[in-house]
Image (cartoon, rainbow, N blue to C red):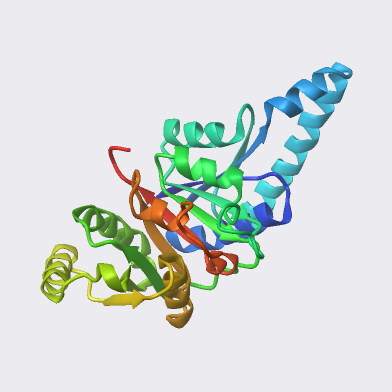
Length: 276
């Protein structure tokens, strides 16, 4: 049974992520916890006024969260609770998820034309950086229908095998087609022998029959290549393995010269390297 954690700030994109998480969990089965965090700035600002102001603020948030949790339980039929916390948002989310053995953090993002530096949003990106559990970012316009087509962007390393094993377990109820793609610049092309060997080893390791392998080369940057591929394959979600100074940073770092526009319409599931 899964345990999902969904940060809520009552914005349209956090509420969209909540709906997405609920539909996903309805198939996966498990429980959902809503978390609303008062930042230290909000807390200190409230203390400048009457104490009752802060109490009213907390009670208002509590009432709204309670109403959301009740609606989720009635509509989707699984347990939904909530928590209020005070602290620095991204650390509080990451720490709470780790301490309470959550399987996945699901966060909403604004999307819609954000640049490569802000497309995930600074708050969500910092949570991704700090989290030890997988994070699913859900753009404002994303709707959950099913995960028929899952794109896993890889640099073909041994770490991908373990991550793919986790992914296969997670998406098994959907019987998704996994599109395992290595995207590179032409000058860094993977040789055919290594490519075939990796395919054989991974297929044998996973024992999952719905995997397609792709080796793609683009003259433009890697992020644009992935964007094009996700669109071409009608991907429902893009999956990445986050490592220190590796593929994820190549994708999101300052070397990327174009906007990652696919995040405006496609959710992004980020796993983390175990020893990170």
